[in-house]
Amino acid sequence: METADRAARVRGGRRKRDWLDTVRQSLPVAWRVARRTAPTFDLGSLAELDEAFLGEHGIRGLLWDVDGTLTHYHASGLAPEAEPVRPLLSRSDVAQAIVSNCDEDRFAELGRIFPGLPILKLYESAGGGVVGRRLERGRERWFTAESGALYDPPAVELVAVRKPDARIIRFGVEQLGVPSGEVLMVGDQYWTDVAGAGLAGVRSARVPTAGRPTFPPALRAFQSFDGLVRRLLG
Image (tube, rainbow, N blue to C red; front, side, top):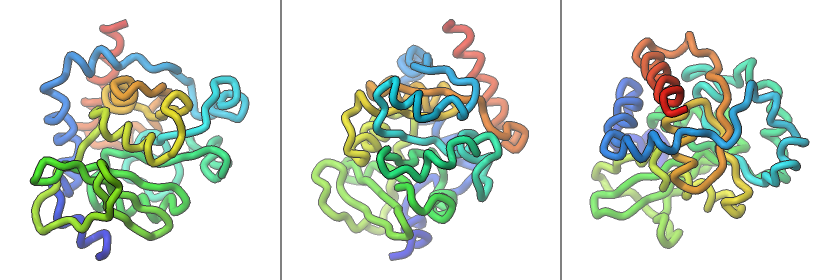
């Protein structure tokens, strides 16, 4: 079944809702999330994420955020700020995947923008199970996260598991096939990318938001809140 058809089966598929779903899911555990917003590495730019950096810190796997990290908001290509990592994205000796809080339309779009990188999402099913989704080189696979068995989503709603939920980061680590101690989550948001990695026991690198003016006002306000929380917590 095509990706677009699958999208009709999941909740939170409209772009105007994706960030609100993130807020709703994280509010019940807000204090625990806030305590994990200190990144392992606070980088001035993605240019610092070079071969020497990976070697020095024993990094063999990378989990990437997209909007604000590799692209501007819902852009269709790599951001100028991310050009320094273009060679890194194509390296076969570093396991890599994209873990984004994107909506369903953006999920399919990311598969076209980054065809060589697995695009990952995680969902809770109506029966309480956890379902993984992987899109790579135009091919999509759904499977139960617990057993890895192939899964055909029923015609019911699936609820996306969103960062900072540690489960999506752990799922990403499993898909990389690299020990968690050798994985780095790279993103621009303390609340989602950094905290999600921290809750999952994975190191994180926070980079400045790429193309911040391209984000809608509500999202820019959330980004300001994100930075304020980090400053208040030192």
